[in-house]
Image (tube, rainbow, N blue to C red; front, side, top):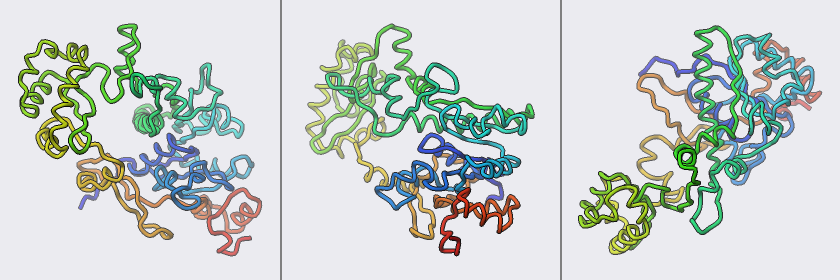
Length: 408
């Protein structure tokens, strides 16, 4: 059994973030071993707690997805006492993560320019929709709006249909991953240089970077990439095909893969020598004819037949979420896990994709109730039982189950 600790063991994070991008970022930091204290509105908690269907009040599916392995401090940072509690926490904090609109943290003296003088080694990850500076810095924004504004929706959907948003919050998710990378890099830089810094990370920049080859398609040609539905803008054949039973998705666009596909799967070597399909660009130009040939053949056999033939090629069945999450390969990789919870018993969570050969990940812990750790955290900071009770009575903090403990 390994005696090594998780990679970020000993790193302390103060998390003021809400919804997806920030909470997913800090959840990943928690998986890597960082200690996370989640600061929440003492009355309502963060917005994600209110999205409860399906689930239970305060910890529905939305909140569970992005908030495991954190301690909850329900604290009113608008009050002088709340701000003083934050400063006590900051004395032993390495990283602050916040995703309020620019200017909000400054109202309470908790913005990075104010904090860096007092805490020069502090790293602050500031996540926003449009950046801490720039023409749109004052605007709010959510993932689907960014999908619309920065090209993602225009690329999604059938050629003759309307633009479509992706149902998953891809920009939020990518922003969370970028945030983890940036925090780890800033920690390395601090070890080298001795000082912290602010990281200005916004959904807009991530959305633009995520355009990748589609963005370069436009920048190098001056042409807007076409909307191609289930196909690819220039990689052919990459598409959805209906078999005699179920649909399958195939991506065999390189010359080598296309030749293997025609020879091993379709048993149609004539397609390899057909001058219409002799190169990637020609296959794209003649896409309708090629896809029609493939579709006709696929309808003659079941999905199981074709998938067995394509075992050595990039192709797969189209699954719904139930089929995906209960598949043997997902379960064998530990990507669906369960945490012990006092209320729910076994609570399902999605696993972490990170696997280190030596360092373990931190053990997953059930998402906290609002204010579940308020009392413990304040006692760790040196506050007395009477002070904690006073804070509670005046609404500076909230404590989960306080009435059950006799606090009125």
